[in-house]
Length: 516
Figure (cartoon, rainbow, N blue to C red):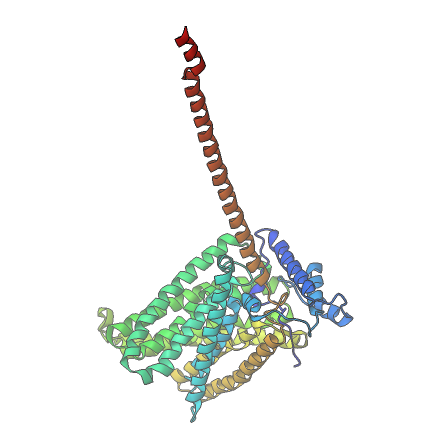
């Protein structure tokens, strides 16, 4: 499969057409116009665009997958700029880092978790997993600093990014990256750091649990009130705000492994409750998403890697239920809840196995549908950040397959899980290479290349201009008020002086009266 990179391809969450108002499209065009004018002034825009650039630009879909004349015109101009001319510096490029960049950490963290559970181990595989974890930690810190710098310089863009159709859904991906970092702490850090990290992870888990709850509630609340998304644009990325709960079962079972007594039981129950909430919301989104696939066309080719996001809910729920069942078997007392007729831990484990297997093939079905859709139009695909969906959801499917093989003690299923792992590793390498290449060639983090960034950043500029206008109006109002008070006081003193002067006798008249 031949691939060409082009950061201008929309992300999976960029598909919804927001009908909140028509100004979204207008602000996007205005932002493009400003970038184009700046590029022309800087000498980076070429007024002569060759036929190939025109053809490439014509193939680029807009936010909703359609090709608008404005999008074609703007992107054609940007595809024709001089490569040898001055490029945006780090300061300007860092303003274009979005929440979707944390999909890199979702995939890298999933690889670290997967390598920590692979059934057939060899010498050095733990070291490979630790390398993935360190890479994940470093890139997470770098992206966090960059997006923090963006919102520090454009603070009013932060609330807009939490409900904008092309960026807001990936805020949940940020918290998934945090969850996988916590999971890696337990897998790779706890055996080396001792009991203090075990106690710290217990506290960190509940802090993360509270944050994930707030994200699942308030972000959907903001989206419900600030946006109106159409059914024909439904995508699996709509489930991302609740994705932090979908991985909570896996994280909870891993942390409970090193806990004891009541702490382990509390974490297991909390993990099961979170997994249930995540799965139920994902089931609702599944219904909307499948309705869209039946009633509308498939997404554009470059957006189809985002279809793999639908693999994650079933995969991580399957893995989470099986892992929590294994830990319940270990930590739940036999007389838990006052039941003495049979061991409660064994019953929990016995129920978790059929429940997990019930969901196992569902994730494989979604993965197969997405794979066939991608193969069908593979030559038309261009690289975008949505390509990281090749890794993270399928890594969850591999983890679920490992756990099914473990509970059934089936060597063929474990071998199948290892085959999936071997297939995911080159996918991660491919995405990493194409991502670095796109950044180096200014096909990401460049004007006209990042979907939704212009809208969100322009919202900051509009709000800032409005705030400046209001401050100026308040200053002018205070100035006019002060001037009015000053004039009033002067007028009062002038009238008072005149009144006093009118009451004072004339010295000439007084002198004449004395002479008389």
